[in-house]
Amino acid sequence: MNTPSSLLPEGADAWLRTLASPRTANNYRAALRVLQQFGEATHRTPTNTPLPRAGEKLLPAFERWLKKQAAYSQATQRFYLAVARRWQGPADKQFVALPEGSDDFLRAKSTRSARTGLSYRTALRALQQFAEETGLTDSSIPLPLSQAHDEILADHYEWLRGREYSDPTRNSYLTTARLFYKWQDGARPRHLPANVSAVAMEARLEHRYGTRPEYSTPRLPEDRIGQLLGYYREALAGLNPQMRGYKHKRLLYLRNHAILLTLYSTAGRVSEVAQLKRRHAGHEFARVVGKGKKARELFLTQDARKAIQDYLNLRGDDSASDLFISHGRQVGRALSTSQIWRIVEDASRHKFGEKAGKPNVPVRPHDFRHLRAQHLLDSGMPLEDLQALLGHKSPATTRTIYAPRTPRAKLKDQLQRYGASVTDVVGSARTGKPPTTA
Image 1 (cartoon, rainbow, N blue to C red):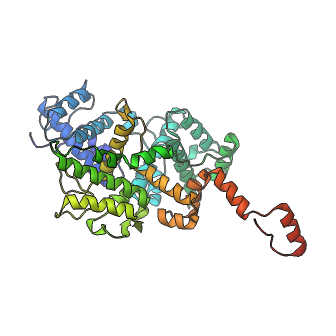
Image 2 (tube, rainbow, N blue to C red):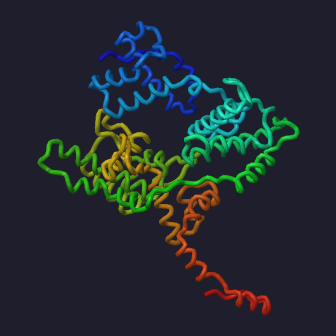
Image 3 (cartoon, rainbow, N blue to C red):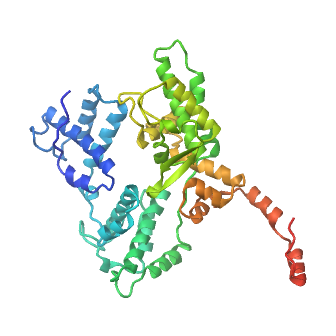
């Protein structure tokens, strides 16, 4: 197979510059080089000429071509095809402008994390698309700040509700729009019209919808996530020692089992678990870089440490310093966050089946974090301690996400245990002594 072209397809450079994450841009660039190679190899474009975006039946032909390239795994083929699909998407969606003032806002707000910057940019594109579709601005013309009005957040939310966004995506986009206009309102000099304010925007939003839409975290049933925790252990028990490739299959299952237990026991983000090193094995704490580039520690429980040691015992001594590594074509390289996602997704697909190529129960790595945190809170862990474990900046974040899900039975028990009766409160007012509790 020929070496991928250094040239990129039409418009690819401009698209890659819009991506906030350098790592994502590099991965996409590699995929687009392969796409350009395909175009030249199949004579869809002359050598050293960018592949046109508007080629007829381009993606099906690219998919067939990829399947013939033995050097690319199925996962790599799927990724390359997904990037090609995004690149060939409608130009009005691919290169949509951003509202006026977005660059300054992104520079001010995106310093902590490239992923945060990418999320903000995507949400601002949705705000721009809303403005174009509702006539606040012309196509590809940045939404002027002078067009801001007190109803704009409520109108934007109404537009979001009418589109096929998931609840978390819809609320995330609205939250970014609120932050955007609040920042513009507080800028010096002020950027919004004199008769418009972010406070008024929030009030109109609350008035129209009864209360301000809040962030919510969708959860899968606990039993489904719990069942998935034991999937690879069950798969290990079902392996036949006489089968071809038994040792390699067992190694993969031991690694994957250790990953799931580590995700749950540490309540760590997938990006944090992916950072673990082999030297962390056997230790209760592992220091990693968390969200916002802040150092924090993951606590490895006895269950997780045992699963990790079982994996390392079969893996044996090697020169790889990372804990969770590839044992395939890129043997020894640390697993990326996307590869860990696929391990969880594959387990979900095999455990619960699939429909249209997607798992019936789409468990994500973050679901193990949510389950662990909820279990700890419901078992009595103080909110402040849970905040420290999760690496949240504020207890308010922990309270917003997890406290509303505390079971009614537990809340009732806490009220009965710590709550004073009306009689005790009245008696306390008379005597000046604190009321007694049950």
